[in-house]
Amino acid sequence: MNRIRLLTNLPPLADLMLGFAGLTATPTRSHALHAQLRRLIIRLRGRQPRRFYSTREVARFFMVAPELARRAFGELQREGLLTRVRSSMTVITPQHKQPRATVRGVVGLPVWHNGYCSLSTWREFHVRLEDELRRRHYVADLIFFDKNAPNLPHFRETLLNHDLDYLVWYLPIGADAEVMLMLGDCGVTPIVVQEGAPFYPAAEYIIDWLPALAAALQDWRHSGVTALDVLTSWLMLIGSDKLMTGVGIPFRILDAEHFRPLERFEKYVRGMKPDPTKGVITLENLWNSQMITRFPMAFPELLRKRRVLIRDRIDLDPADTDGLTVDILSSNLPKLAARIADDIASGRLPEQGQPVILPATYRPQVPVKTCALFY
Image (cartoon, rainbow, N blue to C red; front, side, top):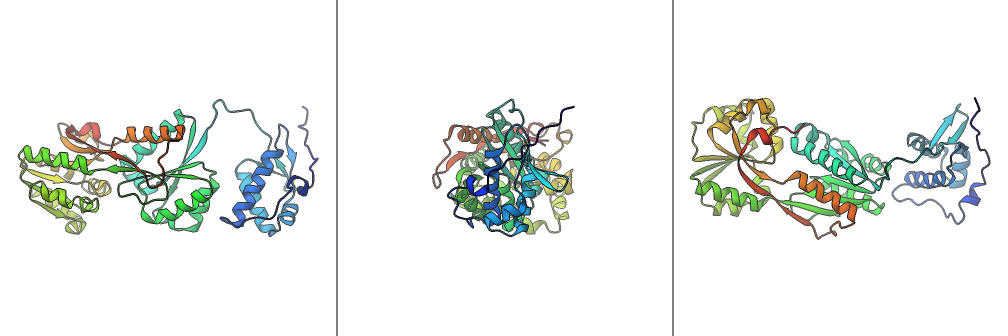
């Protein structure tokens, strides 16, 4: 068998880096060194393996500590651009044949781990967006994180290490704005799906729940609903106070404190008598999911005793929902995912401060089987 020829001829770094004036500190010298070496490797890369500069040569030319150079080499090895040979030589990994489909870009999807595991809506949005992006020859890179991770410096570095072209963040929190600002400064286009007023330094898609809620309340009033329980305070957070008061149906808010300990929710449902003139609005999906997990039979019982309004999906096992219906405020996640993927592919993303408003729709008396768990 013929041995693969190793190319060893390398010009001095100074000849390849004409005009190099030093590393910038934005966002860090480590990231700047990694970016310089990555561009250099792509320039030198060919069909045959080629010897690369030593960490000592790199550290001396770029005027960095040897440890920083070794760390950059390690990251490039993990990316498949460099290969360590017998612990004594670093080789540029040769190019392979072209992929069957052209990749137009990499789209990062930061995903809150608990939300993805607990909520059908989170899973559905990210699964559908990945599918829509793939159809348009974009790679979706799911980046899972814990709740507090966006506030940590290493999370920002992690996102940069994914070499993203775009970032689509579903329902971020306010503290994540700083991360998006930093990514924008580094050439990544941030995109946000959220539920409030324009806020983020990004292309924003805002789900407007109020028109659908108004339609639901009018339908309930005309259908003879005379009293409402609003579970949790989510409605108040989207500015629906005047809407709720103006519809003319008396209501009370039972927030999370009302159901502590959690067993109070089960007692609340069991204490009801079936009454179609009374309604329950429960739009906080994470809270609903927690109650269903803790008391799996309480929610089906609630649906039998009251007219119930939810958002998008309810995380019930379809086997427990025969004959049950529920009213839904729908954000139409498949349509939302397709819209974002289309705008990325066509270059028609909204300008910062000029969000795309996506009104939710009201769907009455939907069979629960059709809006239960999305796996």
